[in-house]
Image (cartoon, rainbow, N blue to C red):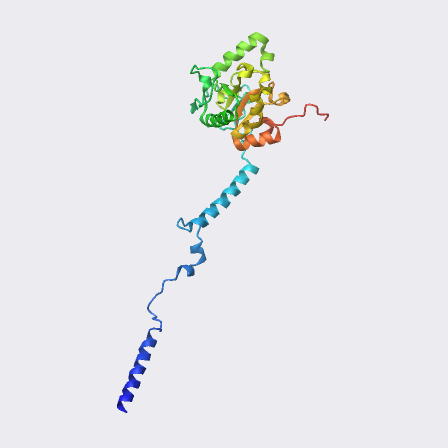
Length: 291
């Protein structure tokens, strides 16, 4: 009998001790599991240690949205805020290093302006002399290398003829042209010093053996000229003085004169078949307007 009582007591003690392990300790603080972390801690965008795949998805979505916004609403310089007016009424541009700087007969570059990052692009030239006109601003030079590389792959005989031109060099060229055909006539195809895009380092004249490396309208009808017309915008260049736009640009048709503006802007200008003036919002009256 005593043995039975002992067994019963021992069993009760075991049950009591076993049950204690399931009783929570009020003085012990448990750490929440990962799944129990508050939402704001799990999804904190400032946490650089978040799940890699989720970060990639978020960054891709954000990037796509930004690209769409940039494409749909490109940032354009203000024409009024990017010039100063001298005492004699001359408008001088101030955004000299902007790829969208507008240089024309109404807006001049400073006489002492020279791009700081001029380089010689690795493209074919029809001459070997190391002349300043081989140079372009670095951003335009890189784009030119990309364009010429593709032209070569496509079997197009494309050559660079003239890039950067200083204020003084442009003055000498215009003076020579004016003496030859008269100042008014010269200004139809030659810019006054300060009004030439070549001084910006963003303009590049191209040519081909088909026109004996000359800068003439016939270039536009050559294989190289047609390729440039159809593809230059893919690399950030536009034909700056298109045919039929003389009343807007102020210069005759020049199928050889390319101007770097950047890929997004070049593609938009090309698609809309407009001049740089129109793209930047210059008020232009229709040639045949009846109003």
